[in-house]
Image (cartoon, rainbow, N blue to C red; front, top):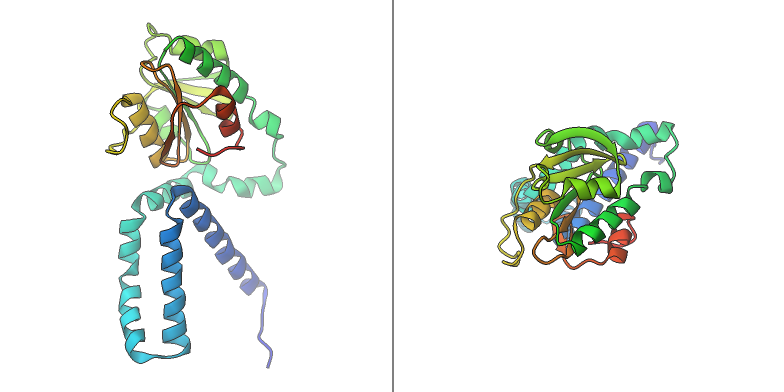
Length: 256
């Protein structure tokens, strides 16, 4: 007896594999991979007991657990689910389809903003000038760009320093960089209410961490009081980052 396997079945397998891979990446980046592994284990045990071995009593119990599992998942992973839906609904969420038909730019072209950003952050930290720089990743940040002064400019260290100069009208908000260009400054970001944040860290750090929870953006914070650089990404905050570490994080060689 042969099992028929057509094109539709192959597409089905590919889509499931794609979904599981990106779910794994999302859980790993958010630090909830252990919980996700436990849920997968429960599903495997349920399929084995209820569908294969046909154990009625424990199968009935697991059936009830699985039936309310969706609600439990929503409660446990509400932040991750929100980020996933925002990414899915954004224009950039489908960028991989576009890249199939068009060759990607070189890494040097895609990351040409790194050097001026690192240089500007070093100078701002030396002068103890506060700064908040958001770098767009996959999730579109148009909603946050609209909260500030919108303009388009090449990423330039001197320009960044002038925008965050203490007497500048835009220095209190955040600058957003997307597609190797400065898109806006003076933007308003969501504030994190995490009680685990050290008390000596101010509103900039809470805003940067809040932005990293709501989106997948990478946020650089320069402390006005301490003259130190911090980086927030995927709900994690790394403080006292050196220039070398910042360059490695921006290039994707190091994680926060």
